[in-house]
Every structure is written in structure tokens, then in C-alpha cells.
Image 1 (cartoon, rainbow, N blue to C red):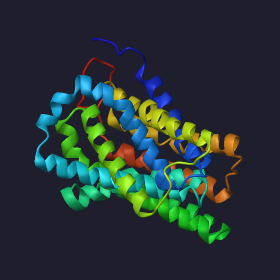
Image 2 (cartoon, one colour):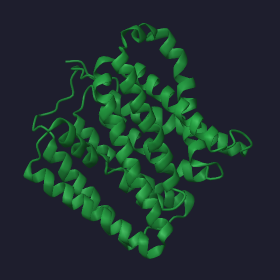
Image 3 (cartoon, helix red, strand yellow):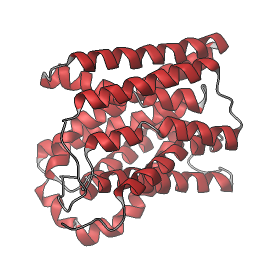
Image 4 (cartoon, rainbow, N blue to C red):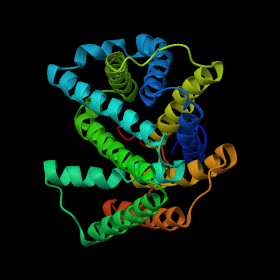
Length: 304
């Protein structure tokens, strides 16, 4: 039994901290339109990936069928609009509210698999979804009491959760046939192209931003993308999907702590209460939808 290079649980902790920086970095770069921030996050990620893809994965492009290109294009478009909606939500509502509501993605994903793939709900799944959605209602109602614009930001964050769900649903079959790097490169490239068109149509300026904004754009490409999601996918070789999902649920906690110290954002009572209920519901949801198998650290590699 071969052990991993380093403890995968440490990788999850690093990954959670890394993805927690995303919302704060977007707030710090608020001098640029949300779509521009999203554009440069993905563009820089693609540019960083090009050398490795050309050296190691160029042959895989011959294996991509026409249907795979169509599904990848749809996934890429939805990923682009996920970032537009979520980043835009941060212009109206707090990091805590926005990230908690986007984290509801697993529930929307399960609803999607029910509608399109006829997967069945267990009683525990239904209860956990109701709990999580109840918590999101408390957050949204609390924000609505503060201002209508904060409530509008919450709606954008929820739409961000819906669009990232569509991204996963359209891309899951292609993902099984391609390596992680090739699939990610294709989808990120399509998303980047989509965002370029979007920004041109809205006449958003591509240049003229302060020097620190370019550092934030690059940091978004490096930390949440590579040190976050890439580490999660690496950890899938040794840990179960449910274990990693439970780790990701802590993103709102990390993001809220960073927002408090870096941005000075206070957390309201409604956000504390609603966020705690959402996280509790998500934990129950993950436990009710995961297989009850014993997970051991071994050399067995899942399709990641």
C-alpha cells in the first residue's frame, strides 16, 4: 500500500483556505467590472496551463468528439456566467452571504440530477435540503431588511449556484473521458472566449486598472484555481468525494473570517443564524447522499 506524497487532509485544509480567498480578492478588485475580473482570472489560468498541456496532453485533443466539444462549450458558457453572477453579487451583498448562498450548489446539483437523470431522493436528502434552503431564506430576509440591494446580491449569488450546477451537469460526461488538465483547459478557454465577447458587447475596458488590481487578477488564477480546486481533485485519489465536499463546505467560514480581518466586514445575526443552518443542512445532505463505505488512504486512484 503506497502512501500519498503528503497527507491529503492537509491538502484539503490548504484547498479550503485557498478557495476562501476568492471572494475577498474579488472585493479588493472592485474597481474593475465583475466580468473583467472573471475574464482575467480564467485568462491567466489558461495562460499558466498552456505549457503543461502542450507538453503532456496535446494528444488528447484528438480524442475529443463533436458531442464532447458541444457539451464542453455549454459547460464553458455556464462557468463564465457563474463567475459573472457571483462576482457581481459581491458588489451588492457581503462576502458571508454571497459565499454561503453559492455553497448551496450541491443541492441544486442533486435537483438537476433528479430532473435530468431521475435520481431518487431519500427522506434524509429531502430534510437536509429543506434545512439548507430554510437557512438561505433567513440570510436573504436579513439582507432584505438591511437594503434591497443586498437582497439583489443574494439573488445573484443563488443564480451563481444554479449556473455552476449547469456547468457540472453539462461537463460530467466529458470529464470522465478526458484527463482533468485537458478538460479544465478546454472549458476555461471556452469560458475566457465567452467572457471576452461579453465584455466587448458591454464595452467594459480591458486595461487602465490600478497595478494592485492586476495582482488580484493573477492571485485569483493561482490561489482559488490551482491551490484550491486542483488540490481538491488531487485529493480525490485518496479520499472520498463526500469527505472533500464536507471540507469545501467550510469555504464560507474561511471567507467570512478573511473578510472580517481584511475588509472589516461585520457578520449580522441573520447571517450567523442562517449560515449555521445552511452549513448544518449541507453536512446532513452530504452524509445522506454519500455511500457508507470505509475510506482508507491507499494508492487506489479514482477518476479525477
